[in-house]
Image 1 (tube, rainbow, N blue to C red):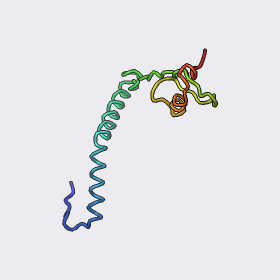
Image 2: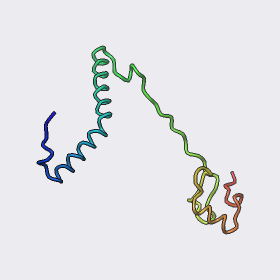
Image 3: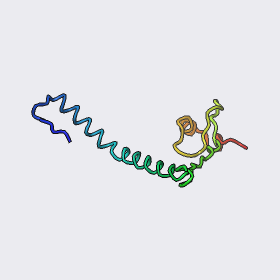
Length: 107
């Protein structure tokens, strides 16, 4: 490890060094994981396999978006599934005296 005479460095050099150290600390684990993965991939390759063959491929299940249950009364391109935060147009329609049944999509 290099020895630094911190007393001889300017404030801008010390600030730069501080940022560099913080970045090195934050990326340390990622660098270690990448190095370990490379070693495991090389070992698998030496044995005639790919890493994906040995550990299986990870597949993330993608969920279809929820079907719309409510539609804006004047603009049919605006709709809401009934999940999550209520959109502003929905709140405004309720405040104007509409009911959820008025805004519901009849299927």
